[in-house]
Image (cartoon, rainbow over all chains, first blue to last red; front, side, top):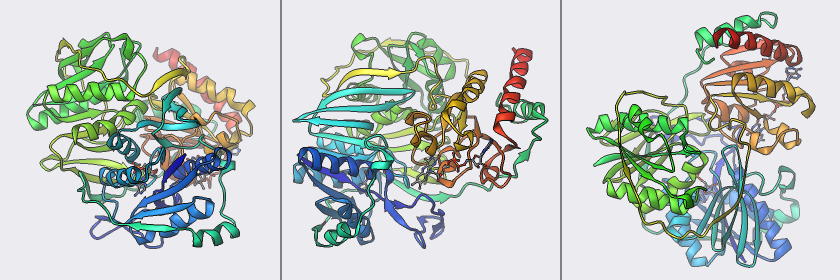
Length: 248
Length: 320
Ligand SMILES: Cc1cc2nc3c(=O)[nH]c(=O)nc-3n(C[C@H](O)[C@H](O)[C@H](O)COP(=O)(O)OP(=O)(O)OC[C@H]3O[C@@H](n4cnc5c(N)ncnc54)[C@H](O)[C@@H]3O)c2cc1C
Ligand SMILES: Nc1ncnc2c1ncn2[C@@H]1O[C@H](COP(=O)(O)O)[C@@H](O)[C@H]1O
């Protein structure tokens, strides 16, 4: 089985979010970048397939040279090779088009992407990619088993979950549950050394234009001080929630 | 030309989010000088949509569509959009709508923006405000395609009654084969889901252990709320993963979020910041949650929560 894992390169979850150039661009100064957490769960599941069922695992990112350390980290975790499509990730559609080209050229059976990226939160790249390459698609995927060309997956739905059966080629939008937190791997020294020798191929982008454009960013307005209510005066809280906040 | 809105129902009844997306679609229709057509599958009280601004409802009745299937539903909405010459398609942020929207975007060659929180600030160029960076910022985003798809963040626009009425037409588009079969659905029918909830009651590690969740569930029941938890609580197996909220869990966009024994780490707040009113109950006055909350009680959850339940019961009885 050939597996492609899509890796989004995102600011670490503790990052302060600031903007530059008249609030038109994300300010990357001092920001630490990581593998998107949802992709890390997917990558770890891919490693499980590789080790238990025999599979090759490639990782791909659409982005500039600055994303290479993130791809190297994926290699250190155990992916076999990495591909970087050398263009700025302008919008979800443009990214999906670039990934579709890579997925088709490589003849992958399974493409694992994340439910959403924690920077743009589009939750759109995997579904668009699946539609472009006409593969089956399972979003919010919390469990995946493959047997030959048959797949069994569990999708998280509002208020529960749904078990589905489908066939390869398949695209999933994965998240925690694919593997557990405790299964995630921190690259060790050997992995890091080996990652240096693994292939990281840079491919040139195909010609696509974005359909949407973030024209400006706004930070939330600082909120007013918390109103403290005495623990012995709960009536006051009920009163505030009813009369002031009007939420009960 | 029209604005098409995909309205979800459950057991024949529209979800609140369906009424909200119709209200939102009506606002866009007014801006663009056109009308709203809603598409509904196996819904009963279709006339209800007229009251929120739909002029026409395309109704599909088909037993084989009982379980949501992304390919079939995408094809249905695609056909409706083409039939109606829809310039904008509006969907909610439910798990099913978010599943469908990206595939629909490819089918309609439409630009799609998710997590939108306000009516468009302009329609040419078509510009909407969305939340990004897990609620740490907003992005004004232009959609530059002929057909546009907007995914509205739940509880962000609210319901707007117009007192209008809608004509209902039967609709029977061609439905394709789908490569996905639903084997089973496991869903608590007696509980409100986090996505649909107007109020969410959430517990953190401060509650010490799963045996103490009885009072959280009771508080949720009194309020008609969904229950949620912080990440360590689900990692420890005290609560199911489906309750984990935050940056790496489910987003919460409720009207009221009550955090009990939760410190307010940045990753937790990121996922719940779009809730309108936040209440924190925590023993530690220095807990970061107090900086993010609207109302707070410095106190022991084991004393405060039972009292709160009692007071709310009295309040409910008086306001019933
Ligand atoms: C990559 C990454 C992603 C993450 N994503 C998420 C996420 O999506 N969601 C999330 O929640 N976390 C997330 N976290 C974890 C986050 O950083 C915090 O560790 C977590 O939110 C803390 O959970 P907590 O508040 O329940 O526990 P704690 O931090 O242990 O806080 C417990 C709180 O309870 C209070 N308390 C103790 N006893 C009582 C009592 N009797 N009554 C009242 N209060 C009491 C304490 O004062 C304390 O403030 C993530 C972390 C990382 C690194
Ligand atoms: N620039 C990118 N390069 C590779 N994969 C990406 C990129 N952007 C998004 N993805 C994948 O798509 C998923 C969802 O991203 P999004 O639709 O932006 O929320 C991510 O978790 C990644 O798996």
